[in-house]
Length: 197
Image (cartoon, rainbow, N blue to C red; front, side):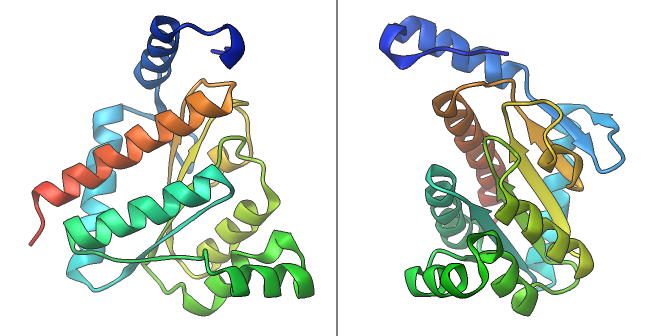
């Protein structure tokens, strides 16, 4: 695991650690089969093309910085790749569901009403253990949706074993995990933007 503390980290060391994380990106399928990274991105691109061609939706979820990333990439995918996207970041909705049903349901409840067969759920979580994202994955599976996960920290985290495609980086610090996830998501978005209709 690559773990650094910001207070003792120098810039070149930070760059080196980030490069190691991205170079060590690992992707596995739902059946835990390891995939070549380029193959995984190609599969993701093919599925996303199908979603665009069939007027399906890509949903994005995450907590904290990952929620910001979900919103950012959702906007970019809509604007640059012409794909219908949705995030669950409305404050009234989040607080209503959290207050009435529990924070572990803030994504799964709205997703249960909106996710349709062959839609995609992109889950961003540094730890891969947040109950609200894991619950959402179960809803997406029940809807016969396609799930893509991005995680870090523990290589055996629950999220990494739950998606159709699971991207994992060996980062044990949130900054490295989040920056790595942003790079992965931007690469996917750029691949789609290049072939936007």
